[in-house]
Image (cartoon, rainbow over all chains, first blue to last red; front, top):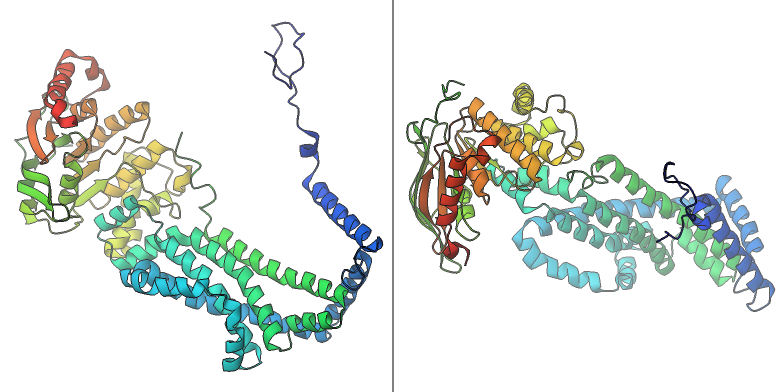
Length: 287
Length: 270
């Protein structure tokens, strides 16, 4: 029975049995080339659609118009013009919102994950609030906190809090029965068990919650600006859209996504630094 | 160390001073009115090795939890070194089937964890020298700053032995400590366990599912039966010390294994 990728065996049996394993062609191309290929195909399709007149240029700008506007916005940002000020306002909303979400979400997560009271009496309310469309609270935040950044920070934090609560509570439950029993036999107090066992065991899940929150906090800040005015990037997008300046909308979104990416990358970096043991924790121990 | 038992027959489990005593211990779980344990009497003497064997549901894990001070008995008296056991104590050392080392701590930091929890960080730092001696005792010298994910299963259990010994407990409670290892490592670790226990004159109590393991390690084997969980038989193992793996093939060893197996009759597995 011949393996499909081995050549028919014409050598004599005394030779070393060495043959070349075939790798599919597509797997031999470097990743960067593969990614560039997808990008080029995407832009080409985009170009064909806009050129063919299928879609009006007002609805979908050509790739080249968008690229030109990207350069324009980039120059404006670098020169420190009004767009940089707007971006900075949005970045502040994101950072404050994230910090607030971490403070509230982590505290609630510990209460819910550590106490029976929290799990029985508080968690149901959190689940109920979490299922509500949180964006619908934006007008309330504006009414309570005004048109300044506070209302946007509040909405951003409101959206980002729940994944952190859930991640923290689940993380605290993830210590296995043996580890808990071991801590019990060592006479560990509840606080010691929390600090030296449960929080550390739960870090991977806590960081998963933080990553989901990092995405949500961005959406919260921009939605807040759409619905509550202000001077941030969301407002620039809204104005550009109402002027039917679609290339501008696209390029503003792209720059905004860089901020979101940076926040996500930061959380990932912190996780790699502090949860150094997680990546290969389960690999060994079987040999 | 001081035992002159180098090659002499074992001194007999009843000659040493009693360390751990259970009198009329029973446990009834209120939840389902189940009698998990009834009328357990046993005495562990200084330097002796005892094993308890029985089918699942015979109450041996309940017994071990009571002895570890993790749950209170419903009836009876439990005394370690003359004081009643009313909770976890530093003179009780315990080891489980899983090594349960924490991946964020180096091997030596895992070993001094019981000290850190009971006496604080400074005491734990002071205990590092002792931890190094223990690592040498179990053959893990040079591994103190290695993280547990780099240890094999057998090495991780050796580190767990060090962690159990660091508080210098009066009794070692071993809950199937090597049953997660492959059979070759398991035999080897059992011989290591014997060596370590002898060198420290440790009083040990082993829960196991393996009859040969119970026989090769123990001075006394308690056979437990379920419904209600009780000690049905006490069998003294009069093989000479130190035990070696060669003994497994001797007729005397086979006879003892047969004897225990016959006591664990069908009823025990229903």
